Length: 474
Ligand code: NAD
Image (cartoon, rainbow, N blue to C red; front, side, top):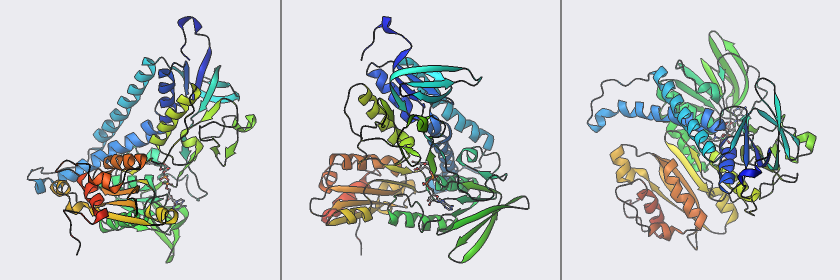
């Protein structure tokens, strides 16, 4: 679909609604494949991930880790008399990280001649989006193919008191002007726990209220979720599982959260409440119902090629449901870009990793132990603790482990579950193992450099044949 200079009409090959990680990646890849692309965005390029999600939270996590490490400096023979958060500089660092990446994506789009159309888009015909800008002026963008990539929004539950001052979503929680003495987090999922660890590092006392029996109930291996809860409790965080929040009320200058738990109705008081109870596909107001787009609840229904029920209309990322992760949206973006330019690629989420930037970090890919046992006749689990890894010892970060879930006969790696320092990076090896169908022996005979954290993966793989070298369990 390569176009010549004299063929530049207002009709595009592809119009994409939403410039988040799904939409902008689809735009760049389709342009690379020769398509003439219009990308429609009402806010800043980069969507939730770059502006109010992954990137700013990881900036805060980085500062939190540095602060805690600096306070432990004497353990490493370094004198740092006092380490304190400097909130205005911290906010500036976080914003600079965001701005640099947003600017980078804009440059890439410009470099690939993607037309960035600023305004709010709505599907008015299967091949046309009406885009209304900030002053109310509208243009119509027509294209051979349309990709819907509108992302997700914070879920809102019918909890009385959600509109009280001091009740925050993750977006408000990113702007820290004061550190609350006590932060109450509703939802012990990914967002709730990442912020719990950030505010804890900055000096807040933190209480987490999770309605399910374990933290991270959305697919994390249960043994790791339980271990994380006990590590956080040991550090002083109050974690209530099986806690159903009834209401939020004003209490003096702060807030009171009332929840029903194992011991009946309980109230906790704090200065701020973060509500992180999930996200919903952002599919309202896009004209989808009017045009008969088939839905799956709030999500847009798609087939394995990411096609909707309307001809030449496609949908990707959080808007189609499933795992709401930036890297999943990026994969969708690449898949759909190939399909709108003549390809026939189906999505393959087998090696989609989950990464949680708590302290310690948690990361996983493939089947949990429970899922594997439900699916496979014979499963063998092998583990290795970071306390026996030399690099982790030198770094003074020995909490956590590697857990491999393998098919007992062949040793094929079905799932990799990690907890510890930098496991959000280490999971890449696990994702590759799952993707290519590697066995524990393949991992064990892949030489891992010494002394490094990935050696823990090697040792766990050696454990499949009882050949672990650097650990002896009594
Ligand atoms: P989540 O689904 O991970 O967690 C929400 C939690 O709230 C669940 O554990 C749920 O049981 C609990 N909950 C729901 N209603 C409740 C109630 N009334 N009282 C107490 N607990 C309640 O959702 P999230 O943490 O809001 O994150 C939203 C999405 O963003 C997720 O899909 C997540 O994967 C994604 N995300 C990913 C990352 C990452 O990859 N590092 C970071 C942030 C967000």
